[in-house]
Length: 148
Image 1: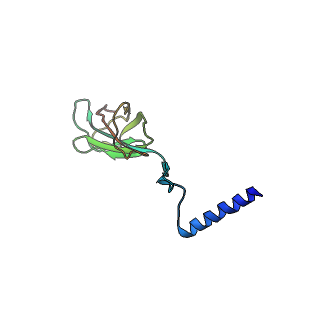
Image 2 (image 1 turned 60 degrees about the vertical axis):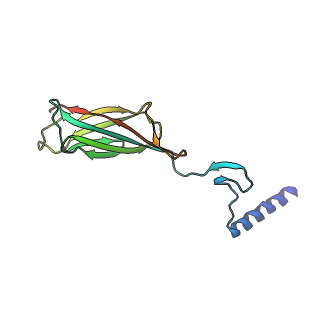
Image 3 (image 1 turned 180 degrees about the horizontal axis):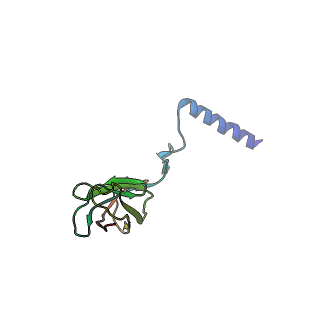
């Protein structure tokens, strides 16, 4: 009998709270009773990984229009061979593979595709919100491409 009474009582409080627009679950960081509770967040923890660098040939001449790919993001090198690429991933990922591809034929020369690893191990994260956004971690990676 007591169980049934408690179920009805809980249902009644929930219904009244819903009608009045009250949230007693504490998803805002504290409950209405002064008890600290975690902030509700949705999605997955995230960090932004940024790599800047320069792509040159074996004689240190800059190469433009090289496709640079990292973790589902891509960009092209500028006329001075520089690039900047950013990608979001789970925080504390220590290493990514980067792919460098010459996709414009002989327009800027003919260079072999190259794969390199870029490390973010022990680098600081900046600008995070202290919750699920860990912020941005940056590094540099210069790459030399060989002729085909």
